[in-house]
Length: 486
Image (tube, rainbow, N blue to C red; front, side, top):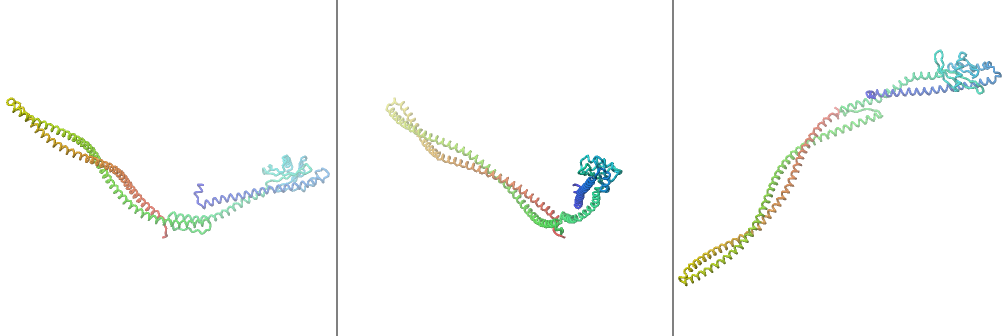
């Protein structure tokens, strides 16, 4: 099959059809030979058995009319019916008795041989036998036929040479060997002419396909046949027309693709530039947001410290207020005690005066006591003066303490309010920090998206450039096709 694949279609067609023709011719010849051989066999058998029956009937009649058993008179009467020596060439018939041997025989030279053949043949109980005998020219095939007389132990035997009997078959084989090449030659000539009607359109089709393979879409296949080759030719022409339309459409689409790819390239470059700027801006914004977040954290920490300080100050002011209240009470108690001392000083002064009066009355005896009274009076005055000063000082201290206490009590709500406001600042700072964290996360995502957009834009630009290059290569491929003549 590989060898056939390397041959041209015409050669393969001729070889295959020739081989099939040879097989067909010799097959038909062999079939005719088989039928003719069987016909000849049947005809020889039929004619021979008819002749045997006829000779057997004649022999029976002759033997019945003969009153004696003298075979000499019987031989004279039967010599004529058995005198034929050219039955199917050199064949003949003879009368044979199982007990007496050959009775009637047209060829005396073969009596001994035929008697032996007849004995062997009758032992087989067959009516026909083919055997070989040795002659001068070598071995020959002999056909033996027998027919028994109805009322006697005698047989009419036919001896026919197969070469002579089947001579018609040999002549037929010679004729076949003579006419078969002639028939094969005529058949081959017809096939050769018929193959031309197939191969020539195929050659034009091959030339047409070669033009198409070289990109010439102006080629046209002209086959006027109305058979499948003509239909194929018309279909190929239609295909070329459709292909031409498709190539033109592709050319237009390729041009549009080139233009659009250039626009996409420009747009993607602008997008990439904008994405890069956006990414840079987002990075700066992210940095600013981080600084703001840091400032908010510092404010939150400062507010937290201020809150702690304010709470501590509020607690200390409350304790100072409590101490001032206690001091106010102590000053009041001191004032009360000083008044008591003042009263004592006043009473002491009166007693001193009384003592001086009594000492003056006592005269000499009262001088010492008068001195003492004088000293006590001085001491009482000094005590009174000191008590007045202390009373005045305690009064002023009490007044200042009351004012300080009043201011402290007024300051405590303000400090508490300040602490509450600092708490609100801390809550607001914490909320702002949370919001800034969310904003920072969103900005980071935006930054990542911007960078991804930048990368995608660059990839889009690269793809657009590649698409433009492919479109250019596509145009180069389309230029391979020739769409118009000239």
